[in-house]
Length: 224
Ligand code: DX5
Ligand code: ZN
Image (cartoon, rainbow, N blue to C red; front, side, top):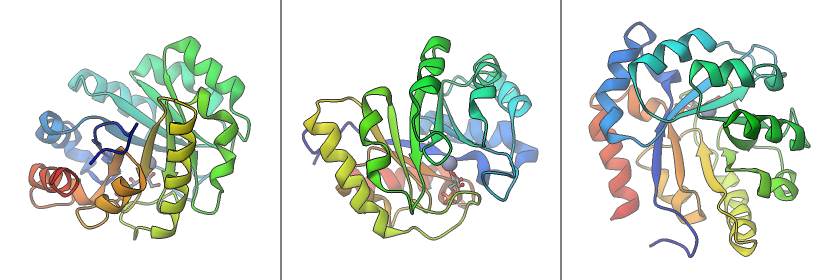
């Protein structure tokens, strides 16, 4: 059952787990079954890994109309909002550990017509986003340490999801709560019950033998 203000569930597969040599085909295969596409941008500074950037997003934009949720694991996201918008991003999320006060970058995103969200790492308290929820279309709780796909879900972060759900509901906000990392058919229900509505899933979709069936199974775990 939906909690009072919880919105219908949405699944956002992360292309980090896709076969990059076949990226267009892998995205096309799941596109009719998913709600957003999660794109992990890493700079090798904020996280100890590199992933992809503007040219890949621009190429993908030509291949699909999906909503692009761009998760910026970079130390200077403000320098890239405009090129990301031009490449086809629909929304950017920025880490609270990089921009503790996101007021200026949230305004920059709004001026560009980009959705905006704040992300918190597992050790970062929910209180880091509380004063800024009104600026956020999305509040993202990391359920793994950022940088790599395929890690084990950290259940302790669900307390933060519950806390943020209460703040969003009590303030009457439309901020959507997204959870990112280790989401699969065995973990999604607990995240939904805590109050999340947008589920990032990399390995459990793109590394599954049947990605469409994997998405359907996750949906069923929430909707049944
Ligand atoms: C981790 C990324 C996640 C990652 C999730 O830094 O932010 O979006 O792709 O991958 P899985 O679902 O495999 O944990
Ligand atoms: Zn991510």
